[in-house]
Length: 402
Image (cartoon, rainbow, N blue to C red; front, top):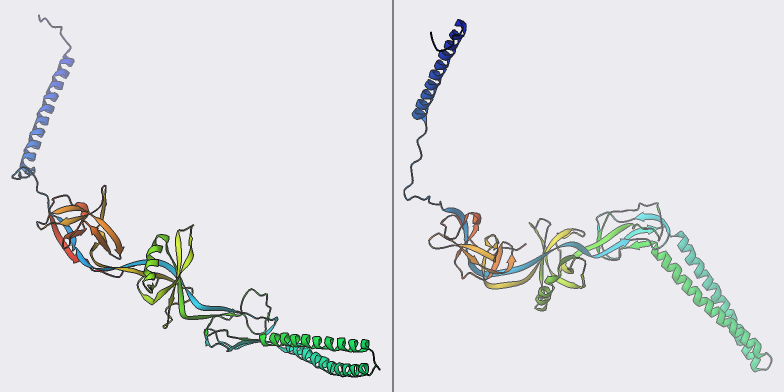
């Protein structure tokens, strides 16, 4: 007899089947692992070859450079301004009445004294005639009064008349003389009113858009004019600059006329060249700006009244100074600096002291001695002593500032 308890036949058969299935699973799993290892060994990429020396070499940084140059640099200041005509007049009526005729064409060039419009003058002519008739009447009365006065004086000398009659006649003569003077003033007033019915050009210039048509009743109190007359030659440009520029502008004006160039809004086209006429007598404290006015001959009508322009003022010319492109100037924790490229094509930072800027150029006060090569593009890739490859080289040339 066996020492183990006997089990049922069916349970023994089930245990054997489970063990056989387990062994088959293990065999299949082992085979799969072996096949996977063989495939990885066959097709896996080879490891990269080891570089000799044990460290990687940094590739040269591509940069653009410019050569430091000594040259004359014009220093400009630019402000936004508006064009003003040298003479602007709103053509209005100085008397009430019906606008009878308009004798100008919109946009027409007119001369001083040209008739522009006429107002119905009949009432004003009647008032002038009435004043003139009143004067003639008083002149006739004065003639009779003076004769009466002469007779009264003759009778008084013969003791036939009294002094009282003489005084009364003298008073009457004086009153008539005063009336005649009033009549003359009334005539002058009526004549002036009549003259106002003919509207003439007060100056040479160009007429604008007609705002009132013939047949309309116009009054002195009307807010709108009949038209506007402007004289664009010469033209003025009124512009503003920061108040800190005031000493430089005044110093420049002390040495002679200060040139001002007017550009269009895009700073791409020159509209005219003039000179500063005046500096305003007060600084705008709200904006810390100073207002200036420049005059332009404007012979070609390039400056149009009301137009926005950029006024560029030539303050001074820096003679024989070191310049570099403004893009070469960098700002760091210790201030301004630039990257220079040595003879060995390595990059080195150099501290700078700079002067004014003109367009794309910056004047170098100290830090460079000339003929060095400075990096104008690609600075973010540089490190001290790192090698560079020059992709573009230029020379810092003085160009028009904006």
